[in-house]
Amino acid sequence: MLPPCTLLGPRSGPSHIKITINRGPAQAKGALCVGITNTVGSAISNATHCGVHLNAGFEIGVASTKAYTAQIVALTMMALLLGADSRAKAPKRIAAMRALARLPDDIREALKLDDDMKKLAEQMKDAQSLIFFGRGYNYSTALEAALKVKEVALIHSEGINAGEMKHGPLALVDENLPIIVIATQDNMHRKMESVIQQLLARSAKLVILCNTGDGAMDQFESRNCTLIRVPRTVDALQPIVNILPLQLLSYHLTTIRGFNVDQPRNLAKSVTVTED
Image (cartoon, rainbow, N blue to C red; front, side, top):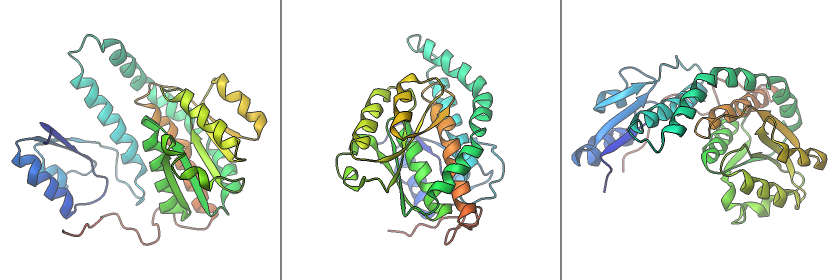
């Protein structure tokens, strides 16, 4: 059964499957279709009832980094609007709105990690594989970071839900596999700390993305872990701050390895999906 509202948020060009989803069962069931797009006049914007234009500016690179962060902001703002009538959620709503106002400063602070990411890229440039562990909100961060490294740096990478670590991924862990763990202070913080302990017990080579001032992560510096510190914000917006240093890492890995950041091998801006 389809929900009364269907959100579509593509970052690539028009494709058969997107239009089929939109014009097919969703609209047939009477669902309100909302398109979130960065292109005025795109197939999605024309096929949906209404939509949100991200206004992130033209994406030169195929990897499309601006649209990703802009989508998170747009979806957060939509959630705030939809929850405006709930008194029980008012404190969280106010905190999120204040965090949105601070977001430009948090982003500027995160971008100061550029030199650190370049040094880290130098250390990882010859890696055959790279794994990102995340959970909760930051599972999507792990997936996006892995996709960027895969797309532009041409290094095999995987974004893995840390809750699934024992179901296969743990067998890959050794001292030669670079692993980045996203462990910022959200509701998964304690569980991510446990994940780090389990990885270290298997001689993992870890980079830990954590919040500035998070004393719980200090212990891992003495255990040969590299800590990347980012500003703390509300859980819904933390993935925006978290992805920035990882995007910078993929950028530097790409340039150091001698590849074109904006035009990855075998990839194009518009994605075509074959019909069933």
